[in-house]
Length: 325
Image 1 (spheres, one colour):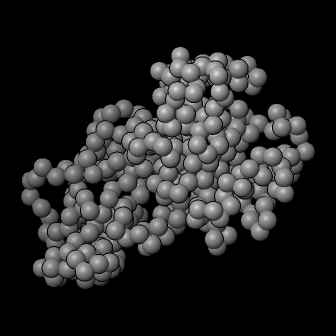
Image 2 (tube, rainbow, N blue to C red):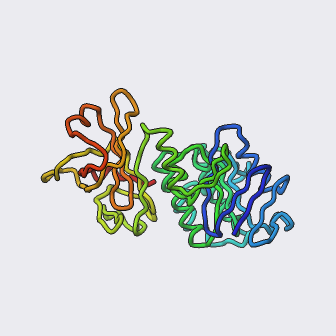
Image 3 (cartoon, rainbow, N blue to C red):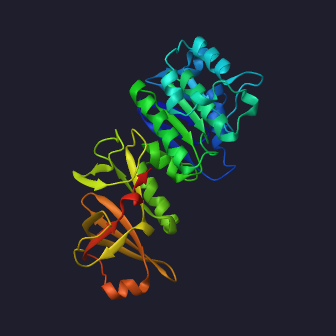
């Protein structure tokens, strides 16, 4: 078990767990990570061992600082090779390929774009991370598709090597993708990823989306995923994807089982809640087995369907509505 204490904040996590840290800009999240790495005014321990009592190189902490900091006046390959030699990590080539760094190896670090710097910085942090990975907005310059791929690649590597991580981000979707729990800065509470996602949905209902764990990680682009023992048709997903999201605006609701349709997925569930979130929007929360699905409908649609709590309904969504968390 890991423990981190800083000021009034305390985090606990298992040896393979990824913990997100969520809070408003300027609250001190980056300062927390800086103190964690330097050992200033913070205590970091694992199984009773005080890591700050060790020499920095012996702590085994890999840190990807905000902005994707890289060494100047070097090629990417030179920087990566130097770190690999220092940390005796010679098997980094496949990881570089997974992170999209391989095409950048011959480039000078000073000409990299923001997203490219972040990919390189993440690779360097993983090379250094024998015991703990620390990430400060590591994919903020990447688009959603690239973000999911890069984070999933890093999480898969860490899962294989039993490396936990702390991840600071302003995007709930980053937490949804790879974290097991989230530390909520303002209330000083550490909650499960499911609870954190539900809180976000309550705060931002227009962005509501189901967050579902897959029974098996995606291993090939076969167009199908397994959730709660049910096969669902899906679009292309990155390798090793463990969770998917289904946006509420992609889900339609019917009172009767629909006939043949181009819409691939139909699930029967129960209306759990109905919330008017705007003049023309009602958020329907549907319980399907042990999972929650959301749909955004209009008030007139609610009236036509005469929807009330406890009603059995059929939720439909296209294959391409399913995307990697």
